[in-house]
Length: 146
Image 1 (cartoon, rainbow, N blue to C red):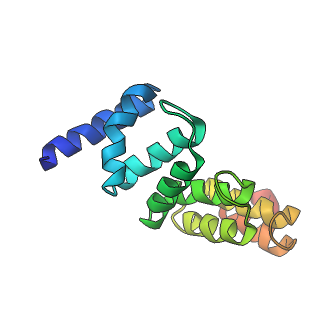
Image 2: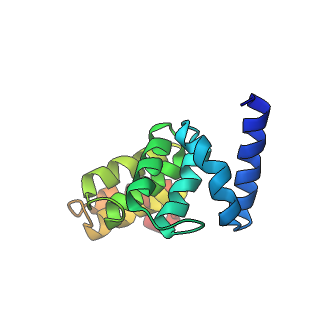
């Protein structure tokens, strides 16, 4: 398949995903996800996790989310961290959640910074640490915690 054709399939698949036409998105994105395209992997993970345009498949959701996260995609790192935090598609693991939220936060994802702050504030999956919580709230732009 030509590079141009792959780009067109990716663009079409993303457009279908974004407009919630998951039955059209899945067949376009699945082959690209298998070939290692992080954009396709992330979207396939969301669809597999939630049964959108396909049967719900936790193993496939985890596989694709992890692959996209490992490629350096910030939103996928956040998604993988959330899976670990909540025990969705994978066994609950606070340490791994923190690790992946930090990677996403390093890329500027405010949602990851805020989630880290909350985890430290509540002692959710990690020992309670008010100073660490304040640090993450401040980085996320919450001045009232500074």
